[in-house]
Amino acid sequence: MKQKVDEIVQWLQNQVKETGTKGLVVGVSGGLDSAVVAHLIKRAVGDNSLGVLLPIHTKSSDMEHAQKVIESCGIDSMTVDLTETHNAMYSEIQNRLKEKNEYIEKNDQLAGANLRARLRMSTLYTLATNYNYLVVGTDNAAEWYTGYFTKYGDGGVDILPIVEFTKQEVREMASYLGVPKEIVHKKPSADLWEGQTDEIEMGTTYDKIDAFLKGEDIPKKDKTIIENMHKRTAHKRDSLPQFNR
Image (cartoon, rainbow, N blue to C red; front, side, top):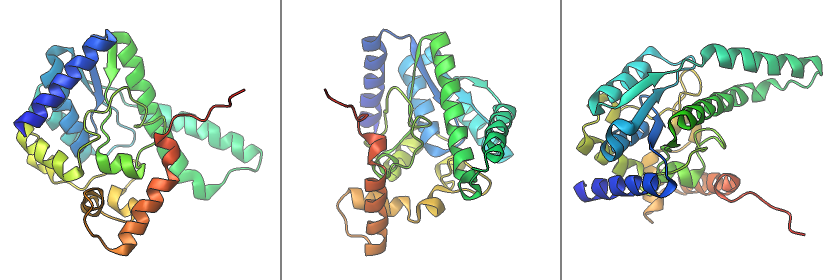
């Protein structure tokens, strides 16, 4: 694990050097993946790293976990509460749709959740521009393969340091780095809405996805879910379609 961490840290340092930037910024949610990335960028660039807490109707327990991450790695931090911004923006969009009688209630939860992710991305890039930092993503191999991220939201980043690692490998890395135990073992959640967890929303587990990615046998039902997610979200991983004259 030491070798893996050292290699990632060196890679992060090279990314900063090659791009001519000054440091690295990550959104810290109180979850496992962002905790690991916060620790990694602190190791890589020291005081030129920033962890940003971006609450939008966020549970107090998640905010407490996010603060514990900040304390555990000693990274410089900032909190930007986007709750009122999200409320005002989404309310305005809903009102315009309702005026046209084109508001679709069943799409409301997902649309609002994606807006949260995109507001967080916009905030991170605004801060990154101020400091001349790179925005660091937190997607792991399971999330990347299944497309379990918001396009131009948490998927809108400059670099992805842990995208080749399974969820279990990220847990092991977290333990090595000194991420608080309650964060290492908490149920993964993207903080998209009240009571939301990744595995309930996906319909399968990270353990099953990790096993699938390693070529191991898993139940047919889970394999079908994973393959369908991968196919359905190809547009998130592929380059933008371009018309060629």
